[in-house]
Image (spheres, rainbow, N blue to C red):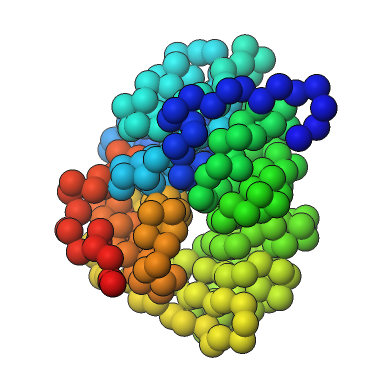
Length: 327
Ligand code: RIB
């Protein structure tokens, strides 16, 4: 830890956190329409709602709903959206010791349009998320170093995400990195401090230049990403499931997803990442393939209802076999 920054004494909840997420909170403003508008076009939608979103918070809430002890490190504005977000974390049993509120920017916001096939287009204004800084991480050092899993994305300042991954990795905490939204010139150190690198087909294409339109193409992109230094790559493919490739010369594996009727795919990737963090923290002996199959099942529940966090299932709503050990 750098000099001059005092780590806060950990509360019991912070000390017990198995999954620590460093990332974003957004207020999602969602319009449901029959199709996505073209540039310059105005179209009618048929429904509007506001929900809790942001990739970091989504992943944290999904892990918490499955029963993980979770802690969120993030920044919201000192506005009603920020105060509502605090309550949302508390309601979902997420430790809020390191949820900061600032007067210098508004709580992050996402404008989301969802068409009748469940596909979306999203614009985010990150606001207060971009004010999360190194000092915030250092204050949370004991919670980070005592966790089992750290999860990061790219809706905050990327330098802060990288510092969080390094802090976790050098303290033997397993890291999951979800490079979303993707940066074509991602700092190479992200790969070397990541255990599980999990991206979707669009992100894989931005990062590697390989158009990912099939499991075969995903395998090619995954092998390029793996060579950059992470231990394991997952490329998610929506209804096609995902491709898994791990270091050590194994062959890539396509893991299909269950066929369901998608109403809204927004945040399904976050549901998958949150579920994976839960399994890695609480069922470490399951094996990655089994963890991915179960995470796919959980994400496939989330696409069957509109909204992001509002569509995430809790443990009590899911079949018991998803929580059984294989031993
Ligand atoms: O991944 C879905 C999320 O992306 C939404 O909740 C929205 O807030 C954007 O961050």
